[in-house]
Length: 339
Image (cartoon, rainbow, N blue to C red):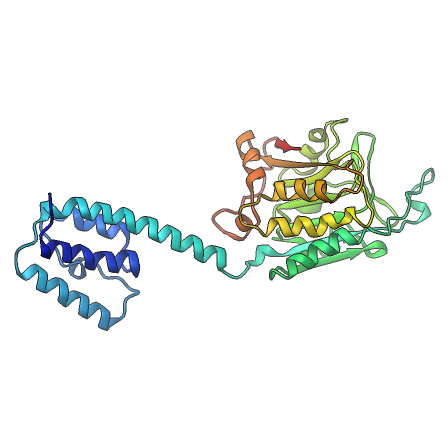
């Protein structure tokens, strides 16, 4: 069915209002397609975002077209439905573009912690060697994200380093918590070395409103022997943490290798790069010996939920609609990992 001149003019006006200016939604257009008679859209739709003079001009134009009685409802139905689909796609593209360019939300906050010098009382048998480069990874990571408008919620270092930060609110609702120090497996439990003690993570450290991503720039954060699930399934149950980034076995901590902090941040600000892949790429590309074995671990209430976390982006953390909720405290944590 071909449209006559008046019908084509009617559709052109609606296209301008719905696709170009977004005054009418896809639902509005579908409603017009289902009316018994051709309608002046301004008699049945009241868009709130249109200027009065614009409303008046378009309403007059529709009235003039309809007054000729040349517009046939049966001929409008199909083009109106097609126009509704065009309006839906245009609105989706517009909203996505606005979301990508909006100022960083609160969940772009980050926290960093590092410990490079240790007291004898940390261990009566073996004092971990100093990590003079411990600060580099977290500092380079934070510095790169600060250039993107992120904010640093907490910085904790050496003898002032507490896990989590001493003010619990400091890591509430943050995107990423990045930690660099020595890590070990002790009696099948992961522990990180602080200045004068070892920290063994537990649900009390993070709660349901803490970081969504935990980065352990330490050795043994994701060891398979014993399986990391045995420890982290208990340590993170019911918490906010949905993505754990770590290494299996030792991680190299020297000047070239700690550039992974900058590389990781630089990777995650690219909209098409997942946080998991950003970590894997960063560790592999900067390791001076090639021996660091990065692991990204998604956590969820079911396997599919955990797998989805491996596709999580920094953009997702900024979006209220895409931000993952905390883990359930009443069900076992499920895991999906990528090496």
